Length: 252
Ligand code: 13P
Image 1 (cartoon, rainbow, N blue to C red):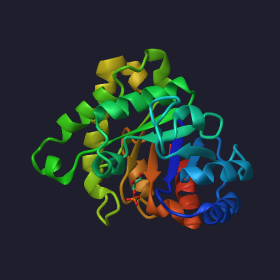
Image 2 (image 1 turned 30 degrees about the vertical axis):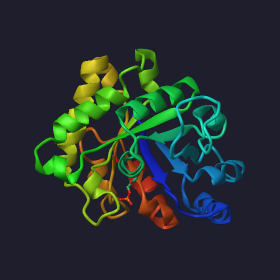
Image 3 (image 1 turned 120 degrees about the horizontal axis):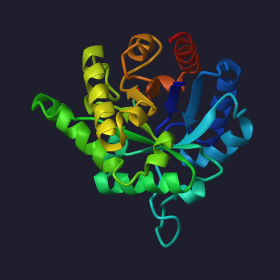
């Protein structure tokens, strides 16, 4: 399976800054046929960056979408509106779930909306520190995976990407340990296997996200069941992002 290096720029960079940064990435990131490199700027920067980048080098993702295709939903952006501009969309990121109150139902509908509009959903799942301390990690991950993928048809599974992002590791200085990541990503793949069959589950890329950068990318990418990285802060440093792409290209 290809490796995925996906940069989530979150709510950083204005349109001008995003264009400048995309230009810098274009000079820094190398193309590898076995690495899918994706950048996810804010909505406003999607179009200018799209016109600027070589899509063989980097694909574009959005950070969110609404699940209705159109209508009176002031301030929302639908997957239908993103169609043709973004090839991926991050769904159910912990910041959406915990700051904006998105629940599993929203997440499920958004996965559906992305798929029906030809955009690959990156479904984010992960436990909070409290859930982890209570020994609920497995239960939480199974619930989030089962709920997020509930209405996905077997034929659509090949478009789905899942990201394991433990909430306590995001934006911290505390990445998850590789033993925990191995256990969590196995739980995720097994749950997908229960839903769609073991063979189909093997085709779904599972990414790790949470305080990952050039210095720990290799150990994370070496974990069984980890097929890529979803990167926050380090995706905003061109040399770090390019380094992760190189590491991904070198790992079997
Ligand atoms: P950091 O890499 O900044 O911890 O963020 C991870 C993340 O939330 C990516 O979606």
